[in-house]
Amino acid sequence: QSVLTQPPSVSGAPGQRVTISCTGSSSDIGAGYDVHWYQQLPGTAPKLLMYDNTNRPSGVPDRFSGSKSGTSASLAISGLQAEDEADYYCQSYDAGLTAYVFGTGTKVTVL
Amino acid sequence: QVQLVESGGGVVQPGWSLRLSCAASGFIFSRHAMHWVRQAPGKGLEWVTIISSDGRTKYDADSVKGRFTVSRDNSKNTLYLQMNSLRAEDTAVYYCARERTHHAADAIDIWGQGTMVTVSS
Image 1 (tube, chains in turn green, blue):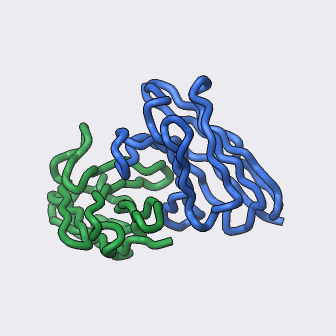
Image 2: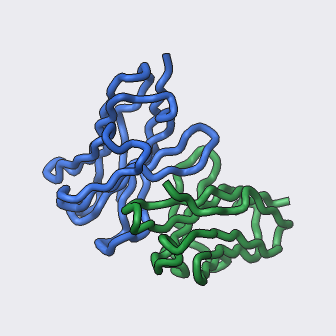
């Protein structure tokens, strides 16, 4: 099963901007499928953070933004806050496998 | 409020079977495709399976194909996961989750709290 590749960790000081990359292939992101992002706080279930590449569900701060280009996508967190410390996962779809695929996950640390 | 509550997890031996249930409430269950997603201890998320809103279409991850079967009872607002021939590598928290809309490959917008399955001799 294919997976999407993310950096294992990123960190930043409060107030800074960090970005998380999500690299796929021509069979998933590159095939035009949307990318979605989830935030998982320690010990809790994942929460939808961004859908269809750039859309924030109600209640998600506008400090979070998403983008997609070619076979990759990115999640940016601006004005980093202590409460943003969590694991973040991207997700898309692989038509060749008829399977949903998650990224490897990125741990965000607020210094 | 919109809620998914899983049950049925536990400790089983390799080769045994287990059935998970997920009770949905607060939304029209029969209008949404549903997923099972799992997370092994200290690891990332792994998609397991999806069932369409009417139950007619199902897709599975290669890792569970032929061993796990997803089903649903729309009259009871309940999703199931029948897990057979369990292996140690199936040890994980299993999340029941809702697809956001009827559009294909949409995001997962509602997650349950998860139920732990441990496969160990």
